[in-house]
Length: 341
Image (tube, rainbow, N blue to C red):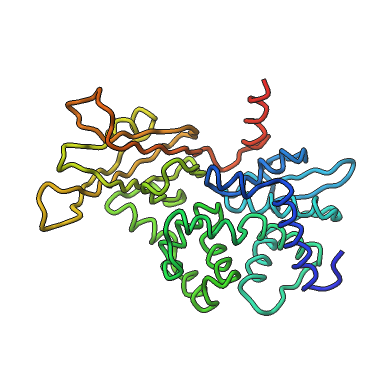
């Protein structure tokens, strides 16, 4: 057990890194994209986990008569994921039982945002540090940056940080401070970014489309996301920006999105070259589904009058839009049970 704040942070951070190495998490994530599947990790470690509509609590760790984790169903996915990782930290570090409320979020944010150590029991500091390192390790941020071709200067833009947050499965504010923790941003830059409201970023992406509310997220997807796993929620929107070679008669078959259960609310084209004629364009399609949905969608870019010909380009996206986690077993545990049948 840690004896001071510094050792608590180090203990939690190192424990998370060691567990990643033991489980081979990095290789798994880099093979499929996406975030750290915290609920899958908990299930794989055979730690009992239940989701319940907890009142006044985000989660709990119990160690008698056997270790177990509780996570609330009353919050959105980033909070559910951080809570689950915090409770996994308690379990992995062999802590005493813990009932965890909103203070775990405030303390974790303060740990990254302030040079002054936050107050709190040292085992809670350890669990916070474990959760931060386990969910948002430096290597995962760098992997997404390489995939998207983001440079260091791009992290100074709130729209980039927002898209990174979605891919990490973290909140926008937490991602700002995580980038500061790893020296991608200075503390003043991170603080400036936290003043930007995610709703404004969503509005900019959705243009003239106005959803009934802005609780859902808005994913900006391009060819760089092809083949990757998009882990979101049932009220999220996709804004697909795909290069289209319309000058040669090639068009993206957006009906394939509709056939997969998505509603199309916007479909625009913009020329890459305003002076050119017959060149390629940027096809921008906004789609969503209001039902929990998990699967894969493939779009073909082809000449409509030659449906049997091979497509010029194919874009495949794997998605899970069934979050947040609902009462009972986690999605990961239900999937594992079905696969075992």
